[in-house]
Length: 613
Image (tube, rainbow, N blue to C red; front, side, top):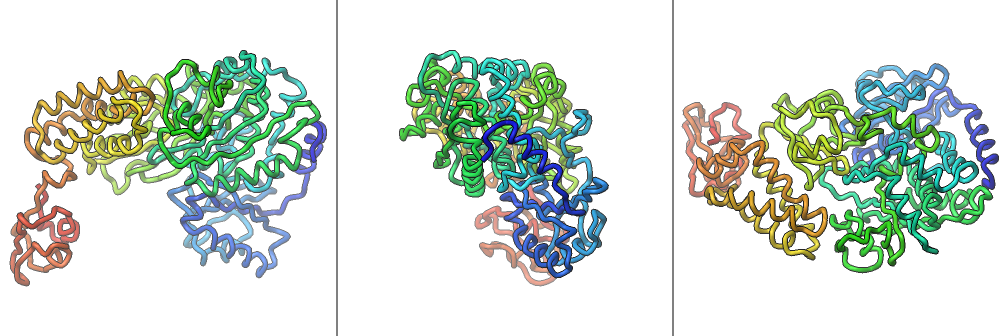
């Protein structure tokens, strides 16, 4: 039990002065790491350390995600005396014996090492001149998220102690306001201003909500933070509760995140046991409690009023604003809704100050942004960069460009609510306003990268398919309008559309943006409008020429065998509908009436004898 700020300081000093092992091995045990097979590697490490008698030299730390999804299973070896570090990727069970035997961060035969430009620890000198700057991800992949002592050893809960013993509620709001922190969930609303609205309300009950309902395709930033550093979010929510006069917080998290839920609940239990959650925190008289609320995975519940309705047991549908939740939210009481990444910035801002935070990023958008790189990019994973970093640097330096030496075509930011950014736009610095000018948006931080083989009409249809499925159905423009958009895109991809279809597609997209009730409908046409603006030639090819330039839309492609065919029969053996005929060592023929255009023949031919038109 930690009863005062002084006790926290003493405990922190005790943890920092505790003698460490010569070697610390951090093992990535986020969802992606576990899926890639990190658990048997962990067990093998335990076995080998005991077998080689290295228990007094090596300490194992089970961490959250390191962001190295492209190289899972991944581990980090640290020499605590010299500070030397080495990251290993794609680690295999059979390599563990050799890593333990080295007892040092050195290259091991047959084990991949990760380049330095991908992974930068936080810079204690506050010089963020590297490609990455870790504030939100500072502890992820470094500490054991299941051990509160690991968090305290990294100055955890010191910001809370400072707030409760040295600052007034208004001081906290002023600090966050001066820092310029904007909501990282997509809207970019100034966090300090939002808190001030709730603080000004005369109410005996107020609520703090953490929106952990991360639903964008290809986005996994919040999940990684909750799995790797749950106490940072808890500490931030307590601080925010003190600032606005709230004593109760709710973390609304989708049930599809079982590992994050497990670690969050454990963190809540540990913080309560230590006296950092509950009654009279640090002897200040301030009380704050947090509970989890599991969502059913509805994308629309990422919108704050729909989320509030869901918590209240109603249908997850948005409501008209005003009143805004900060004035009248959960159970008609003042309610603050911030997402995971927004909260995760708060402890560092309080500890280091608004001026420090403003020294990172840009004037309009201070701080950093976490992005999940997905799609056709070479290095899938999590990165955290200062605001103002160019899209090109994120994709081609941190992400190492496109897989298989293919050409970059576009990147979708903001998920199904965002738009496509082209090669000509890659030098654009990351920022809320700069992305909106391109017809896209920041969103929660997903980046889906596309290459030359992607059809942009099909991409727009993919996102519309998602939006149609996730619409709550409350307002007509979103419920009906998006279905009509999807139907038009389907006609274009099938080759049954004409130029009036394209005109209707544009006009209806604009109407839906202007008339939908919530952000889901208001932004759902963005993928269509941005792909038309930047890739109109592909739409025209589908409509006028009845061709899909990328060879993706099945109804608009055909496969033919040319005279390079040597009659090896591989294509015929791969055809699932037996529509390829011909004798051995003779040119084969495809029956176009029976061909389902799956492309297996094209992919299997080693002699370039099959052409795709």
